[in-house]
Image 1 (cartoon, one colour):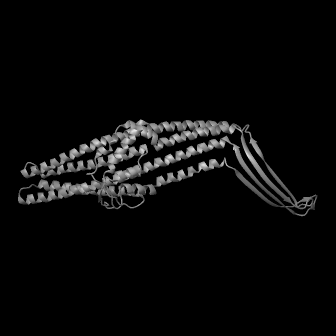
Image 2 (cartoon, rainbow, N blue to C red; image 1 turned 90 degrees about the horizontal axis):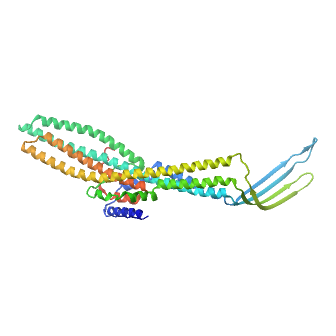
Image 3 (spheres, rainbow, N blue to C red; image 1 turned 180 degrees about the horizontal axis):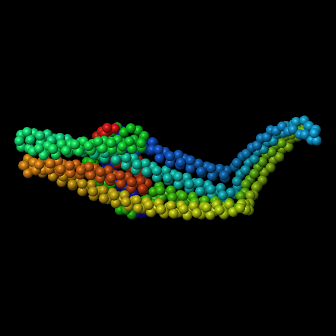
Length: 449
């Protein structure tokens, strides 16, 4: 338990660090996307409906331990004929009311325990699906942002290349340039225009994926404010506390624990079919008949007492149900261990993704500084006559590629953080609000949407 407390302390520290970043709200940002997805994501709504249906198992099981009341009303017209002689028709009335209160029904008591655990399992599955909604909407959001980043970088490269082309044309007219610089610049422009077509299509696809999740159109999106994002704030610390925390909070693991408990109650319920049951029964019967022998004959019967039901033999049905329940219990036990192993593997994977992502972002930031310095050096080299415009185009293209790699690394780091929290079961609206504070006010264009 001490280890888990350390993990919670670490998470609180991360939350405080993110919460100190103050920023405004957005019409379509990460937090708003998450809220809309919780309302409109079809898969989540399916699981919600399934959970509501499963919740009815408890009142249904509980009803088997509560009193039951039944009533019967009969109104008949009797026609009698004997040896060819017809008798006058006469009516009969039959009214009956019965009240039954179970006193000892172990089968129903164990079934109630089983139903409660099944409801816990369904609620855990709903919590797991809610975590999955966060992962899906964040993945779609970051994919859409990355597509827009690609378009912006291509547009910037195209703008710089157009300026290079214009400078090369002026230099050729002045007699100081060469035709090769013009041809290379035009070739680069043609390549950028072709790339823009594919990127615009990618923007439409990624935006459509996000729109399906949130259930509304997406005209603009808030982007990451790189000045606010320090990758070290996502450092999860040691992995052991996270593994312990997952055992305590993971919806998938908690759901499988509930399944095991439900299966144990199912075994007890199946075995109790061998045992007697005892009910208290009270009945009221009224019979009214007009017939040729007794006119206006009314009989009222009231009774109450105990009814003992002793199962003796059902053709092996009870033993078969016990074997079935035992087999299901073994299945749910294996499912539990499989969920634990899977959660640990996935948690380690996302943990390493975060650690690598932090180092990768810092490496790309340094690479960007070096790339910018290379551009400046080549531009000076052109003015000194030791470099050509083609050299500048190549180093500029390398710089834009580093910028794109850096942006992608940031999205991957945030996505890994969300997946790690979802595995533990702690990715909620509060966490999305903290991540949302890393977004900037300037919204991206719709990208031809």
